[in-house]
Image 1 (cartoon, rainbow, N blue to C red):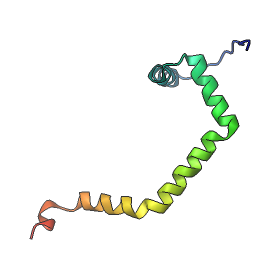
Image 2 (spheres, helix red, strand yellow; image 1 turned 90 degrees about the vertical axis):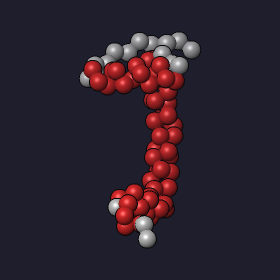
Image 3 (spheres, rainbow, N blue to C red; image 1 turned 180 degrees about the horizontal axis):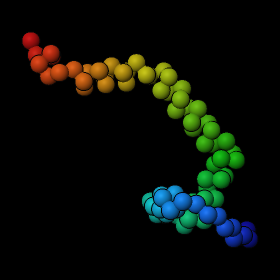
Image 4 (tube, rainbow, N blue to C red; image 1 turned 135 degrees about the horizontal axis):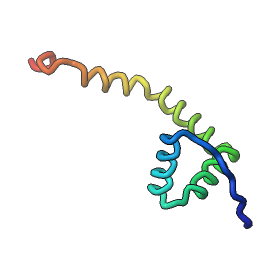
Length: 79
């Protein structure tokens, strides 16, 4: 497939994040951006966000209990 060059201006911190994430994935910046666009257009990102929201809604009480247990003073648990 032929490639087309695009140009975009982004904040320096966004550019650095993109470079680091692309490197983490072993991708060029162009391939990383192409993957993001394809995931967005295919609905993959939206489905992942929806799945995460459903998971958090279902298990929020478990997270709340764990957080409360961590905040309980140490002496309060000793008997």
